[in-house]
Length: 78
Image (tube, rainbow, N blue to C red; front, top):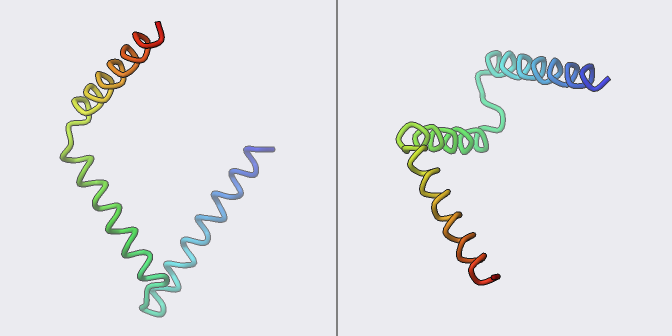
């Protein structure tokens, strides 16, 4: 039953997207233009960060800091 609901929701979202793009193409205007521009800027910023940040080095640094914090807390606890 859950799969059917998820399938119907995804089909409804796809149909809504197609109807929205068809309406925008017909009228030549963008609906919710300000919010969509803001979303586009945020998405571009995230893609820039993902493309230019060394994720493995960042995660290694975060893990080192977390392990030091845990070791420090364990030393205080003991």
